[in-house]
Length: 165
Image 1 (cartoon, one colour):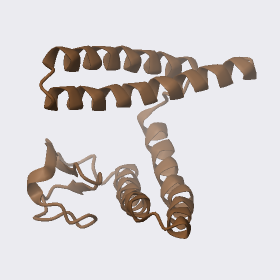
Image 2 (cartoon, one colour):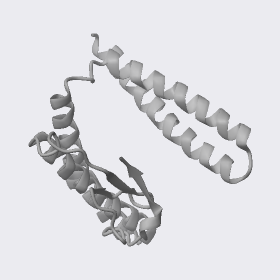
Image 3 (tube, helix red, strand yellow):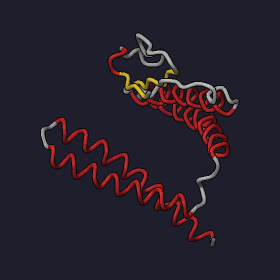
C-alpha cells in the first residue's frame, strides 16, 4: 500500500474513532436532558462511525492474531502510561492546572493496570479461568474479579463501577 494512502486511512480511522466516542458521550447527555430520540440518533451514527473505523483497521491490516493483538495492546498501554501521560502530568503541573493533572495522573494509573491485565493474559494467566471485571466509571480503573468498596485510584465508591461478566 502506498504510504500516502496508508496515512490517509490512518487519519480517517483516527477521525472515526474520535467521532464514535464523542457521539456516544453526546447520546448520554441527550438521554440525561430528556431527548431520547436525539440520544438514539447519536447512538446510531456512533455505530456507523464504528463500522467505518473497523473497515479502516482492516484496510491497514491492523487486526492480527489474538496473541499479536495482546502484545500490541500491552506495548501501547505501557508506552502511553510511561511516556505520554508522564509528560502530560508534568505539563499540567508546570501550568498549575490541577484538574488536568488529576485527570492525567489517574489515567496513567489506570493505563498501568490495563498493561498489567494484558501482560497476565499474555502469560496465559487468564486462559484457564472465567473472570468478572469491574470498571470505575470515574477514572477507568479495572478490577479483576473483585468489586472494590472504593476505587484505589480515584476513591469513587463501588456503586459507580460497571460490571463485565
